[in-house]
Image (cartoon, rainbow, N blue to C red; front, side):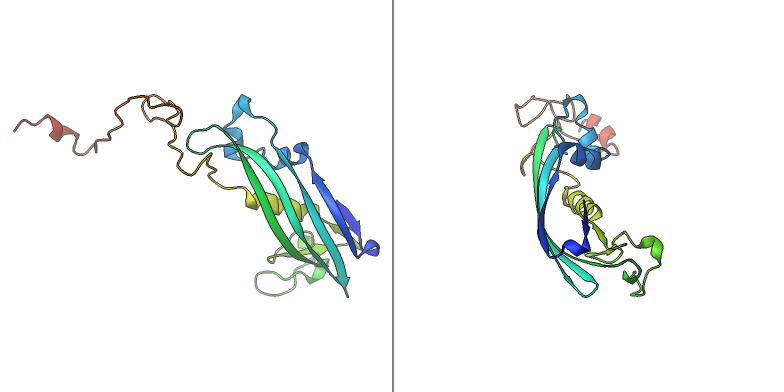
Length: 184
C-alpha cells in the first residue's frame, strides 16, 4: 500500500481483503465473542485521490467496508457497514507537528501524531496506517443488531429477541431483601 511521489497526481483504489480486515479486528472483544460461530471478518475498499503541492501530499476519498461482530446485547452475528470520508495531509517525516505544535523527531514520522496528518519518508507514501486507523476508529465499541435489541435473559440466558422465556427478571435491591419477609 505504498505510493511513490513521482506517480502523483493519481487516483488509486485499495482492496481490503478479509485476511487484512481479520487481522485488524482479531483482538476486538465483540469479534472474539463470536467464538466458533465467527464467519468472514469483513472486507472493503478505499478510493483515494492523491495530489501534491510543494512537499505536502493531499489525499481525499472514501473508505467503504463492513465487519462482522457480535451484538453487545444478544451476541448474535451482526454485519456493521462502514463508510468514512477521508481528507488527510502527508508531510515529510520531520515536519509532523506533535501535541505542542512543535515538530516531531524522526522516530514518530510514520504515525499521525496530529489529527489527519501523516508522514512520509524516502519519497514514498504508506497508506496502510491511514486505512488501519480509519477502519478501527469506525468500528462501534458496543455494536447492536438493532436499536431496540432486548438482549439475553439474565436468569436463563435465552435470546429475548426470539421469544419470551417467561423468567421473573424482577431485581430486588439486596439491601432491602430482608424487608420482603416482614408481615404487616
